[in-house]
Length: 278
Image 1 (cartoon, rainbow, N blue to C red):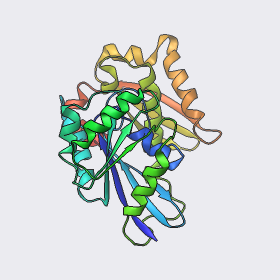
Image 2: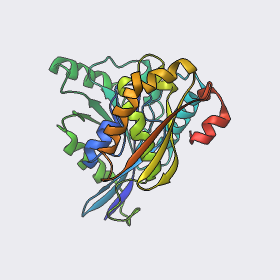
Image 3: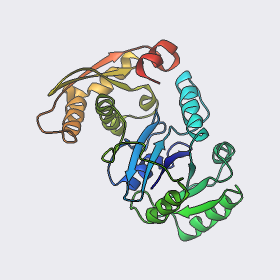
């Protein structure tokens, strides 16, 4: 039996969460096309007859503009330190830039490089990206598409092969260690990111404040009064659509209550970040 930890790191929007979901074959991390969708370490557990791998999805490492951004970077970098394998994800559709190299400098020399989004990149672009990635001088390179699953299998075999011998780290039926209440808050935020534009994605936080099944109350925080109307929508249309989409992903009978509250500049205030778990 092999068991161990594998962290997935990279810049924002390179597809880290999509890759984790593809590896596990189930959704344990929310996804969107907005930067900094992932704000905490999310662990997903791959269980096989011969191995158990605990994958750690991380926030995208970026140039921070707020205290929240600084904490997200700290969370991501911390996930690289004490794991058996580190996977660096880069985007096949964008040139390898300073941000990618900044992250690459923080992973160990035996890290694995994933060139993601090959399904929407030209073969020439994929080849050029693989050539550029080779200059990072890491240990292995895998072109794949997390969105379609093409190429994910060989990556998983490589990671499993690098795991040390050891016992189960989680129960054999575990899929994630994300608390259920936190997960519901994330599902709400994921749906809000679909309609959020410009600075609003960064200004939204969601937290479950009451849980008396089947009733779940979720508080949606924004930073300014002007953002409140956008999140609510005309005649409550946005909140209604969000509630419906979230209920469809929960057990039958769930009742979601959504409330919007202004917490001015919460991204920059330590007490607010502490309360939200960031």
